[in-house]
Length: 140
Image (cartoon, rainbow, N blue to C red; front, side, top):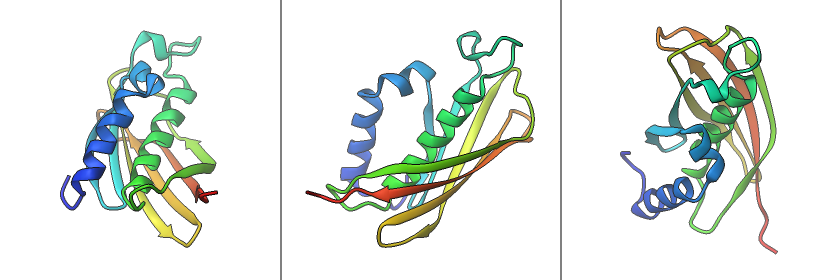
């Protein structure tokens, strides 16, 4: 977690601890740099769809969380951002193992932040790719 301020590391730990959804999916942060985040998640029976594959919503949730953490590394203390859109392209089915999502901010503007993300499986196959936009929330 090089280059990440201490206040952000504490904020990250608190966000993970108080997020029931992230804990339900058992996501883990495995890398964090300015404008980048890498999270992973193990495929479990509870996350499968009716054909035995990892549910696309679980993959999309991992992407949304990883892109959110990448964005958060660029925010000043007290600033917040929210997902505006998320486009996911599912490229391969995921049956077993873990998936890893690497997210990277590709443009950070005054109000909007664009993030790309790639998801790979245990064999480093690209299984999904995504593009997301976040909006900085205006303080009222």
